[in-house]
Image (cartoon, rainbow, N blue to C red; front, side, top):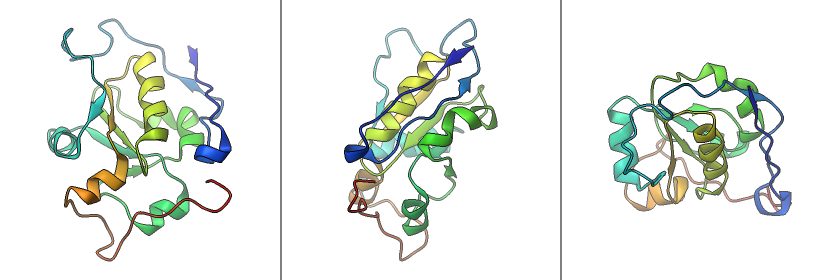
Length: 151
């Protein structure tokens, strides 16, 4: 089993990927990705299409950010809880990770790719999603600003 521990400077992200064990990679890593496909970054339209095709959407932001506004259908697993909750995710379906700006979700994408998941990052995060005209919930939801302590 692969141990996924990534520490992120708290001043930048206020979070880290905590200690935990991701399920081991399976042969054919990652499933269904063409050998020529190298980008893990998806613009909002491509991310929406991937989710419409059955991909899981995982929001790795903090609780206060989730409560302020979120993409309909997303599952909320804060970044620091992700390794310990990895088995909640379906390995046989692609995963699109997202956060506020795409930075924290990039770490999650890379860790899950290394563990053999077909994982993608919503480029620009929820900010790009909203800027592209896509809706969030609740109807009066917003993209939460970082807390003064950098979280």
